[in-house]
Amino acid sequence: MGTSPFKANYGYEPIILLILWQVIKISETVKERVEILINLHKNLYKIAKLVQKRIKKYYNLKKSKGLDLKKGDKV
Image (cartoon, rainbow, N blue to C red; front, side, top):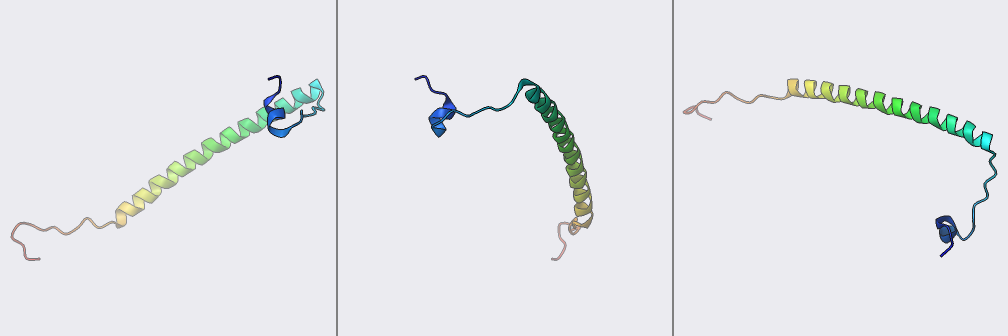
């Protein structure tokens, strides 16, 4: 076929105006941002688990255990 997927989808080839040192700099910046996002995700996950535990604890405290009925009791 001889065409790239980009050209097949959009009808033209993209123009790249980056120099090698810019790509290296951008890739370092991207790595830093990815690390920040991964750490943020881990922290949010831990907080969500903590919130779930607390919600469960207080829900179970308020939940009624029911009546102590025995066979033969009038209801």
